[in-house]
Image 1: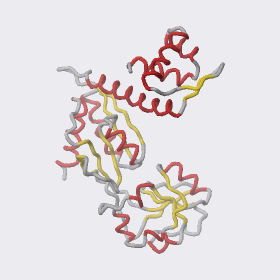
Image 2 (image 1 turned 45 degrees about the vertical axis):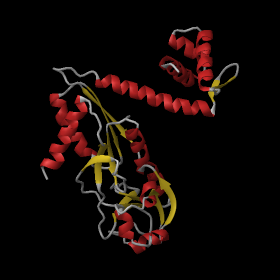
Image 3 (image 1 turned 135 degrees about the vertical axis):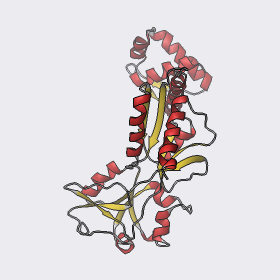
Image 4 (image 1 turned 120 degrees about the vertical axis):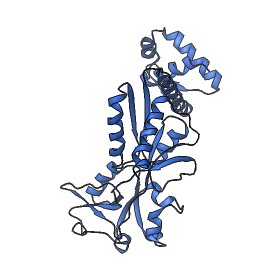
Length: 295
C-alpha cells in the first residue's frame, strides 16, 4: 500500500467523484480509477460503491478513511518535528483538552512561549476522555488535559490547580433554580444528564462515586453526554439537569454547586517514555516550572 494511494483515496472520498478528484490531483480520470482499483486489490475490499454521477464509501472504505486520516496527521506531525534547527526552535505542539477552565493555565504558558519561540504553532483539540486518550495513544497529540475519573497508570502527568467544582446546570424556570447548592438527596429525585466517564469508571480515583457513596445506582440518568455544549440545549428544553464542572450562568441556565463541595482533579498527561520534539520539550519544561516549582 503506497502513501500516495492513500492520498488519492482521501481526495476521492472527499470529492465523491472520480472526475472531480482527478481534476484536483492533476490526473486523468482513468489513471485515478486505476490507482484506486490497485488499492482495493491490495486491501482485498471494495472501498467505493459507484454510480454514473457519484461514488460513496463502503463500510470498509469508511474504516480506511479514518485510518488514512490518522496516517496523514502523523506524517504532518513528524514533518513539523523536523523543522527545528540548532538556532531556531520551530514546529508544532498538539494538545487535547477536556472542557475545563484549566485551559487558561495552558493559554498563559503558550502566551509566554510566543515571546521567545514565535515559530512554534499550537494545535488544540477539544474532546472527551475517550477522544483524547485515543489520540494520545496513537501519537496524534503530545499532551492531554483530563478530568477525573481518569486512568493515569499509562501516563506521566502533572496536576493542574483549579477552582472549579462539580455541580449541575439547571433551567432557570425549574423547581430547583433558586437553590444555592445541591445535596445528594436532591440529585436522586432529578433526571440527570451525566458525562459518560463519570459513572462507568469504578476506580478508587473516582471522587464522585466516593462522594455519592453506595447510592450511585439510584441516580435517574436519562441521557449521557460527551461535551457540555450539547447538554445546554437539553437542559433548556427541560430534559434533565447536567452534571458538570463548567460554571455557566445565562438568562436561561444557572449553575448550582454540589454540597459538600466536590473539586475535580485535573491533570495534563503524556505517554511514559515519550520522545519529545524540541518544541514539545520546551513546553513540558514550562509546565514543570509553572505547576511544580511554584508548589
